Every structure is written in C-alpha cells, then in structure tokens.
Amino acid sequence: MMLDHPVPEVPTAAAAASPAIRLTGLRRHFPGAPAPALDGVSLEVAAGEVFGIVGRSGAGKSTLIRCVNLLERPDAGRVEVLGRDLTAVDAAGLRAARRGIGMVFQHFNLLASRSVAENIAFPLEVARLGWAEREARVAALLPLVGLQAKRDAYPAQLSGGQKQRVGIARALASQPGILLCDEATSALDPETTAEILALLADLRRRLRLTVLLITHEMGVVKALCDRVAVLEAGRVIEQGRVFDVFTRPRAATTRRFVAEVIGDAVPPGTLAALPPPGPGEVRRLLRVLFAGPHGTRAVISEASRRFGLDLNILAGRVDAIGAEPFGIMALAAYGAPAAVEAAIGWMQDLGLTVGPLPEGEG
Amino acid sequence: MLPWLSPMLQELLLEAAWQTLFMVGAAASIAVLLGLPLALLLQLTAPGGLAPNRAVNRPLGLLVNAVRSVPFIILMVAIVPFTRLVAGTSIGTGAAVVPLALAATAFIARLFENALREVDPGVVEAARAMGATRLQIVAKVLVPEALPGLLAAVTVTLVSLVGYSAMAGAVGGGGLGDLGIRFGYQRFMPEVMATVVLILILFVQGLQSLGDWLVRRLSRR
Image 1 (cartoon, chains in turn cyan, purple):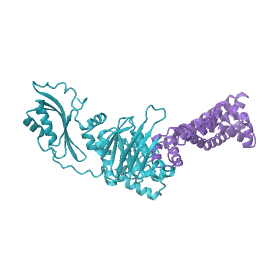
Image 2 (image 1 turned 90 degrees about the horizontal axis):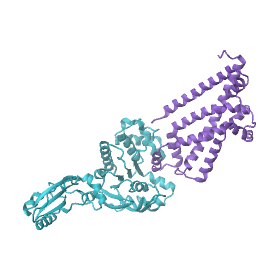
Image 3 (image 1 turned 90 degrees about the vertical axis):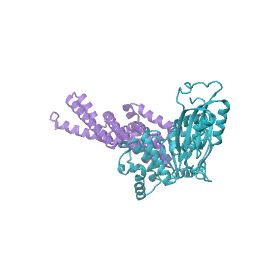
Image 4 (image 1 turned 60 degrees about the vertical axis):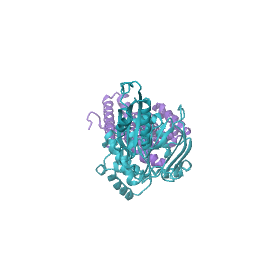
C-alpha cells in the first residue's frame, strides 16, 4: 500500500456562504401515484461546485432536477437559485431566471429542423438577441465543444456524442451560471460517455460553472462531482463529499452503488471457500480503508508479523477520487482472538478505517 | 387534344377542370388558414398541453367531430343558410367553396393536431427550460418541427377535397365530377366519364407526388 501523495484541498466543497441552489423541503406527489416522487428533499449546492444526485430509476431524481428550473412545480417547498425564490416570481420572472440556468438532457432534445448552429442559437433567439450577437456567440461556442466542422449539419446526421455536444453548447449559449444535467451521458456508450465527462469537467473549470447533475452511474459522480447525494424513495438518504461517501458509505443502497466503482466487492463464492479457523483461532472478515498520507507502511505484512496472524486478501484496489488517493481491501484475518483484536487496534491507531466486511458483499 | 370528344365537350371539360381547381384550391387555402390555429388551440389546451383548458378543448373537439361526422352531401345542403350569408348565394362554384372549406377545415384540423402531437415533448421541454414564451414555442418549435407532417396533412386534404368537390354539382358548383355525372352517367357517354376519371387520377397523382416531394425536401430526419 503506497499512498504517499498529500491530500489536496478540494476548493469548492461547501465553502461558499450563499449557495447557488438551495432546495428546502421539496415535496411532489403526482396525482394517482402510490407514493410521492419527492418526500421532503432539502439540498444546497455551493457556487462553483459540481453536485451529483444518484439514485435508482424511480427514486425521484428527474423530478428533483426538474424542480430546480420549475419545469416541475413542487407541491411544497422552496426553490432558491442564486438567492431568488423561484416559486415566488411571476411567469416573466421565471422565464428570465430560466435563461440563467442551462439544461442538458439525456435524449439531447435538439430541434430536428434546425442545423447545429441554429440549435445553439436557439436560446439566444428566445432571449431576443440580435443576429450579429447570436452569430458571435455561436462562433465562440462551436470550438468550445469541438464542432466547428459540423456547423451546418442537422441533428439526424450526428452521432450521439456529437448531439450531446450540441446540447451542451446550446445550454451554455445564454452564458448561464448554473448547468443542470439530466442523465446527460446515460444514452451514450462508455467511450463517448468518457469524452462528454471530460468536456464537462473542462467547461466547468474554464467557465466556473455550478453544476447539478443527476445520474444512475456512479462512474459519472466519481469523474465529475465534488459532492453527492443519494436519493431513495424521494428522500436524501446520504450526502457528503464524494470521497467520503465513496470510501465510507453508510446506507445499504449507497454501498451497492459505490461497490460498482470502488471495486472492493469480494468475488462470489470466495467466502464459502475460505478455510475454517484452526483450533484456538478466530476468523474475522474485515474491510480496511487506507485514505490519506499514512499508507506508506507495509501495513498488512507488518500486522501479520507483529501479531502472528494469517491475513488472506480477498479483494483490494488502489484508486483516487479527484486527486485524493485511497486504498481499500477486504481481508480474512486468522489468529488468536486477542491477537486479532490487537492488530485491529494497531491499524486503527495508524489512521486506517477498519470495520467488519458488510453483509451481502460476499 | 382529346380527339374522342367534340369541341363543345372539350370546352366544357376545360371549364369543369378550372372549376374543380378553383373549388379545391380555395377550400384548401381557407382550411389551412383556419385549421392551423384551430389545431394549435386543440393541441395547447389538451390535457398535458402548454395551456391545458378543458372548457376550451372539449367544446372545440366536439365541434370538429360534429362537422366531420356529417356526410358531405348532407352538410352541403344543411348549411345553405350559412352559405348564403357568407357567399351571398347558395348556388354556383363560389357557393360550393363554403361547405367544402368547412368540411376541409374540420378534417385538416385533426390531421394538423396529430402532426403537432408528433413533435417530441422533450424538445418543447428544452424550449421551456430556456425561458421561451408559449408564442415562441409555437412559432419556433411546434410549427417548424411539425412542418413535414403539416405538409403531408395538406396533401391528404387536397386529395380528399378533389373527391368532395365531385358532389358540388348538388349545389350547382360544377366541376369535373359534376360533368362526369351529367354527361358520362346521365347521358350515357362513357368516353366523357372515362376522360373525367382519367383527369382526376392524374390530378390526384400529381398532388400526391408534389406533396411527398415537398415533405422529403423539408424533412431533416
């Protein structure tokens, strides 16, 4: 375990005093639905932050993001964007506010009858900008998303990734401070997804955007987000910095989501095939998390020597989220009960997080 | 040009063809002008539309259905007082345009409504998210995106109008259909009937081909 990088400061997480987006107690129950889509959701997204919302389909993600620009009006709760309560403004005020909030859609939602340039210019037409201004903006946006050559193509002639680039350019055309991404990569193949995520990361940095995105793919959160909230049955069940939520998930749903990208799941059948403890020994199944600068010691072999344990590594991975490295490992520890306890204590003293292997991950 | 017809019949045929063209053209133009706003109103006020309004949508839908339910030959006679009010007379080619336009308006309104409904709701949502007004959504999204479908609806309506116009003889409207009935059928002149049918076939084929070509030209899908 060699993790000697310093932990960098995350510049954006929950630092700003006034949040870009503040949702308070959002409720939405669709008529005829058995359960509410949103059941009291409160969130704050800091200015300049990329905030991810994950959840299974039907968890209320789509309803939640559509509440931010009031495409969906919540039954109760407040939606404040850049300090303004959008639920309280009139229709004209809402339209004006929406021009400051870009939105990218899963199925792109481009106008089939318009060329790439005309699609990108569309929000500018809506905002009644003059022709010259529109042309100038489009000319500036095309290279930003790498579509100079497709200026006059129609959406039907583009690949999925190119369509989403148009969608992103269109969302940025009115120079919004906030970008909403509604499953922006879910209709794309993995390679194109990586391209679009790289583009979003680049744009976010260059344009200092505040981004709220919803996704069911943890890979998207890992690649892009500073903070994440997990939505289940219309409630936020867990939220925090992506690094913390990924390395120390609390809720079972979160653990399942995280497992697909953290990769600490023990291969099926491994636990059943483990040898039983010898006479006078115990067997403990442990999950060990190395995070931060203390991973330079050869902890596993040292623990084995010091406490006379047999340590069987069942699964493990070294990775980084943002620029923060971490290692995670599933162990089967064999030894005298006291020695095992002492080893756990010693590892915890080193700053490692040691816990039992969660149920159902064998 | 048509050596199997006497010069007089040829002249009658030409006149009838012009009458048909006039009736179909005038009725279709009125139907498009009235049918598009009607279809937009139906679409916007429908449940889940941009301005849902049952009190407008229901009666309007019923009215359109009512007009479409009445067989054209009956409609033509039933609205004679209305025709007289609008056209000043209830007889002649001009008077025949009134019931033709009425029937075609109801017909095309439903076809237009279907074409508008085919527009991807996601695109409308994107426009809403950009802060577009309802008028902007109609003018910049709904109508342009539905244009190929709207044109196809115009083609279908034109073809139907050619058929309806054959009944215009009942109010003295003249036209090719009327000529076919009066000479081909009632005076036992099969060559007139055959010529009329041939011209109608060519006419309809031409309309359909032109319509299809335009739809292809305008469709970016």
